[in-house]
Image (tube, rainbow over all chains, first blue to last red; front, side, top):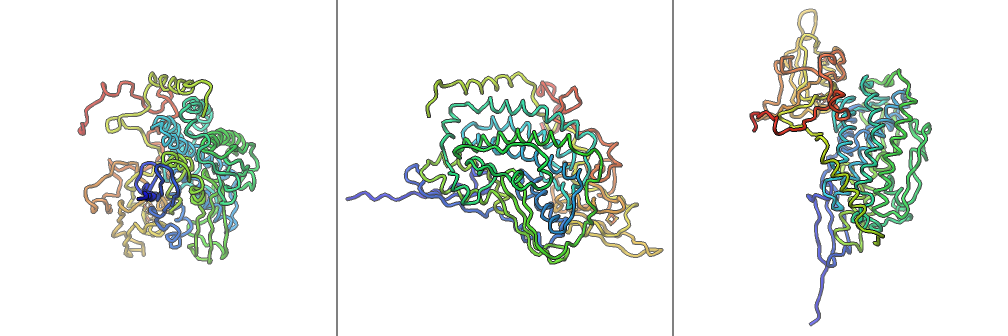
Length: 368
Length: 181
Ligand code: SF4
Ligand code: SF4
């Protein structure tokens, strides 16, 4: 009698520690090898796009905090950039610099979480994360000092930022920027040459350059595949054309490259912050004169920025009333995980976990 | 994957962790030791100043949760008299938009953060509970006039000598036993 074999179906998630949220992967396995994978999203859906239709333009800002909850500040910025485009509001110079400093701090913090949890998935259980959390805590302290909360900042406003920086902020930021390169060196000493880590991540989960471009990936995932693309350089929004920094790219697009691109971007972000601190005007308005209940003219606008995870866009349609007619969010991670199937087929289950970890997925943003 | 020599990278990493064994811890023993929150903290339980409030209702419109219930009637000289000012802190997301919008500085965020309640009904704060009291202090979020009264934020960035986070080198031996122990 011939032996009939069937592929084995396995659910990873929705409550699985390495899915970084409520995310479900339906795997088809041949032994231990993944033959097919179907990502199932929607467990964290809160209907933010619909809720936004019943809120005024200012009231939507706290909702955008809840998208990518590890990088709320850049979500705020992206939304405000879109509304400013729609209503034609000019942001004061000092506010632009504050936005840039905070976006870059947020990028460092978000990359630290991404790299830390990626190493966690690789098996370095919580030691590197806690080293990185220590510095993330310092960034969060700075955010707390300025906007009063540690995770859901609600700091950006249409036309600027909500409050000016307190006096003690600049010295603290300067100390952070001076200290940080040493800690980045520490992270590199801790893990970069670790043989187990290299063996697990080099050559694993390759995303070829063509596929990355075809699916429209963005952020570190795209740059790790060797594409020199960064909205801050390619289409400088805000004042990014005044800064001198490099776009970091990987070579082959494997998990190691995605890790290493993020580590290098932290250094580049520090460079931007340093220059912004020098160039920032000491005084001046931090918000354009925009009333809290304002009505932009009817029309539509698409505002986009380079968020830590990639190209984040907000599409707003206004009918001239106090609330938007439609708000659509274009999240980078949702686009990036469409490449997951191509990347994991043929790898083992243990590799699937680290490939998924290297994508830096935040479910709040995928499900909205 | 092939390496020329195995173990160098791992040894380097372990050397770093070994070094950290001799450093002071940066954590604090929370219920016994507390850090100062930021002066602008958006803590729980907002503070409402009845003498300043004119009953204009801007805060109720600014709240994205529809969370503030305000009932007024016309008193003498056609001024509003506030009959009811109620805020459900269980539904509040502490975004601070109401504080930001109040034109008469009559509302401020609180500094408290240990506000768990046993019943949902207790989370609904009325006029008395929202008013200023010994335990109920306003934070400087959008109200810079209160900043001077609040202690400086303890930052992890600065070490203890620079006035930063209090570090407990021997946390367990010096620890005072609280009611939770
Ligand atoms: S803090 Fe925000 S949610 Fe709470 S009452 Fe004020 S506006 Fe409403
Ligand atoms: S906005 Fe201020 S003054 Fe007006 S009702 Fe609210 S608390 Fe009172």
